[in-house]
Image (cartoon, rainbow, N blue to C red; front, side, top):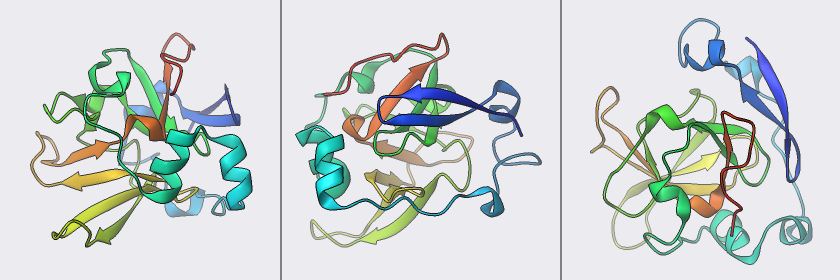
Length: 174
């Protein structure tokens, strides 16, 4: 599998090449054996690296207000990566308008990009999704998405950084 290293505000990040992106879950995709050790940082390190909103969302499992982040309506093509560690999470080709006010995707870039956890807050059971590499809270996954997966990954824009296909950051994270 081809991995391209790109500059990320917090260091280098991995970006799947077009060849690897087009083969998301099949032969040549990322496997558990390709995973690196989990990234761990002290609370102080996270606070220095992230903006207050990014810290609240990713480390304290917060939620940004609906329609508040520019990524919810972005049409730019590229890769959405974790703001905490730069690992690729979603390809813009899987993004769709769910009408919820948060960026929504029908599938991650690989099976190993995310980890799922039961969330019993707010008087209901939901499935929380986190970055598998650094355990940053991203949002939730629901079984009401479009084909081909039927899933809706409802993700906080503050938990993402988008690298457009032209190599530019699409937006400055707030």
